[in-house]
Image 1 (cartoon, rainbow, N blue to C red):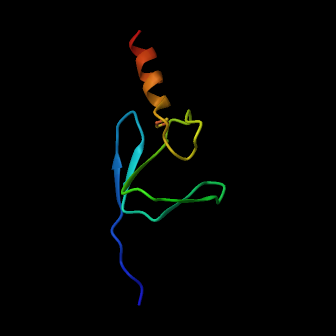
Image 2 (cartoon, rainbow, N blue to C red; image 1 turned 90 degrees about the vertical axis):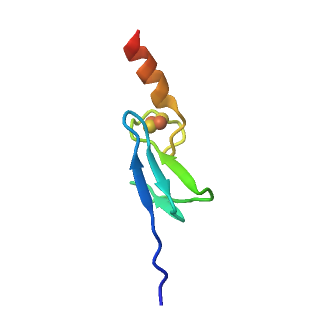
Amino acid sequence: MSEVRRVVVQDCPGGPLLIRGADEVVGGDGTVGKVERPVVALCRCGRSERQPWCDASHRARRRRKKD
Ligand code: FES
């Protein structure tokens, strides 16, 4: 019998998707990333150098828009 797990996805406007409760994340290219934290952030802006994870590069884009 398989275990039912609850995974929560939270939208952070202008930033990443926060994923709570996942064991692994599968990227668009099929790469499987093991999740070893209770919460991980997935990049949505495409600027992270650690894809699929958010490295906070989205913050630089927001600051430039305010200049
Ligand atoms: S959403 Fe944070 S670096 Fe892309």
